[in-house]
Amino acid sequence: MKKQNPREVALQQFNRAAEIMELEPWIRNVLSYPERVVKVHVPVKMDSGEVRVFEGYRCQYNSALGPYKGGIRYSPDVDEDEVVALAQWMTFKCALVDVPFGGAKGGVKVDPRKLSKGELERLTRRYTYEIVPVIGPSIDIPAPDVYTNDEIMSWIMDTYSIFKGYNEPAIVTGKPIYIGGSKGRKEATGRGVAISTREVLKLYGEDIKGKTIAIQGFGNVGSHAALILHEMGARIVAVSDVEGGIYNPDGLDIPALMEYVYGDSPTPRRSVKGFKRARSITNEELLLLNVDVLIPAAIENQITEENADKIRARYIVEGANGPTTFEADEILFKRGIVVVPDILANSGGVIVSYLEWVQDRMGYYWEEEEVNEKLEKKLVKVIQEVFDTIRKYREKGKEIDWRTAAYILSIERIAKVYRKRGLFP
Ligand code: GLU
Image (cartoon, rainbow, N blue to C red):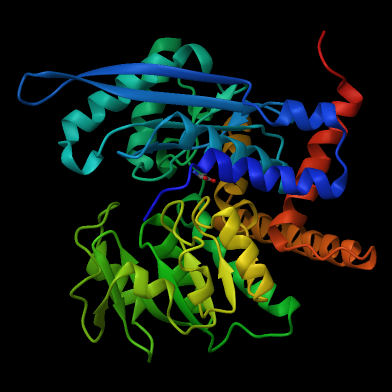
């Protein structure tokens, strides 16, 4: 399958919205480029004694609304265009959900599953050292993303704090609770995906109870989305990971599957494959299952012009960033399939990251209930606002999809700031 350049996808999405909302050309121009892209080379002493040098990035896309914010991923697919696209999506995500952050993303081109724990720690600490000059609690705040977790966030926090000479928990979010993390952060992205699914169904007069759902990806996002949707009464019939998927039309026992894959470990101990009472399917088959809701929660470029016309789900809720290409979006829209876009559906993570940063800065920590309540309230409000935007444009004779409506709302929030603040100098 040819991989479409994610930067291209991100720009096409932005341009479509900018066109429809008639955004001023100067703001459109400014928002088409990242403010800064830092490229670093990260030397790491491997266990063998050999020194290997890894390529790393931090893209700071836009800071009109506040400090740059976004995760760091470790993956062999990382390159400049991917990081820039992801940082652009973070910019529109933060603006959409109205948290006072700009957008950023970082990455190291590496397969972390091939590193020992010691190598992973040395890589993380050295990468942090390389980006210390451009990050800070009021400058740019990293977080977890693909193949990074709370342990890696601890090393980033520790490394940064050593350089500063004092503890600075607000430098990074997604930390373990006992070093300044927020209760509910780990589950937040999955919880947001589950809430988005339930609320969007509700807006179309449907109940989450009994709905069949397939989830691609069983990492931090997919697994928690599965568990919370299961608790809401939905039937999760299929899940997958990089090695493949499992399917049972009667529904999978998600709590048992969580135990099977994770146990007490923060990272998967084994693949979902081989789980009891389910038959094996491929990732491609999972995407084409006859279900009510499909949740891509892995990586970009999964729903493309090659498979969009074969998708049978009525709703797609994007747990991953950028899983649907621009062309696929158009095919799905024509077919009447509702796509709840990444910048809305997976925003629960950054919403609770914002709450974590706030708690770190005031040095006072909330109970999980309070965090979950704040998350839910914010998300439900934004979902309604996006829905209202679709209706508003319909009244003007323009049919737009959920992604375009989300972009319009988000871009408007940033544009308003530019109009008032002006452009330096
Ligand atoms: N990596 C997550 C995302 O793509 C979270 C970012 C954050 O919390 O800063 O939204």
